[in-house]
Image 1 (tube, helix red, strand yellow):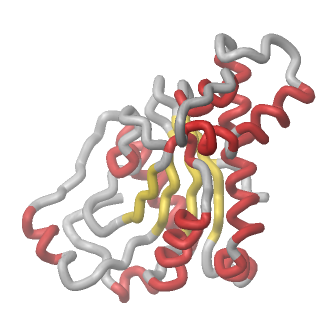
Image 2 (image 1 turned 120 degrees about the vertical axis):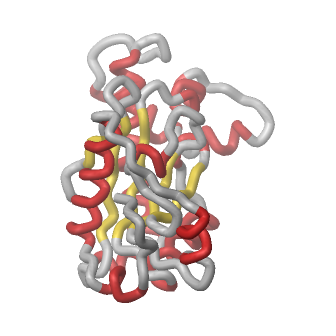
Image 3 (image 1 turned 45 degrees about the horizontal axis):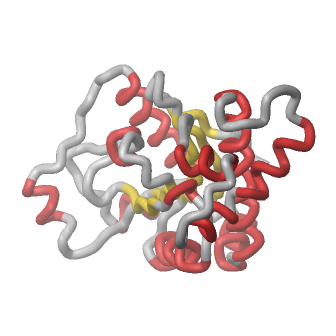
Length: 213
């Protein structure tokens, strides 16, 4: 959670993945209660000029209604944020995560989905349009997996179905990170980082962190 001090190398070195999760939870609780306290002053900008030591890297959807730094009450220098429709994973994103953790020392990787996600809805609707088609193909495995056992309407008009697809998509992306990044998997095995999934609720402003698997 943001305060008046930019994270330093010494401060980052004392962090653990669990401490970072708790910090993000505290920041989100403040956000959900409308207790906003981000302090991004020009002094903070200048303090961060000579180096960055963020505590986490968060992969989120591009949705304009999901302002990641605000949701966790984080300021300049606190977190890396990667945004792409449907919070999907590809080699460039994996490289960015590896940089965030292996090079810059972040202790936590979070894949965060959200309700009412347009990318999820488009994948369910089999939208085909330019480069969007290829992006949505990465979400299709989640759609297919949920359809196998889902009881009820499996169209984009069913919010319960969409929510389940979104959650499954997050879980699949977490697994893909471990599968396709030997660097991050090795760091997690050594307890240097944790890789976790999460869901943002637009109605409450709350973030639910998934159980570790």
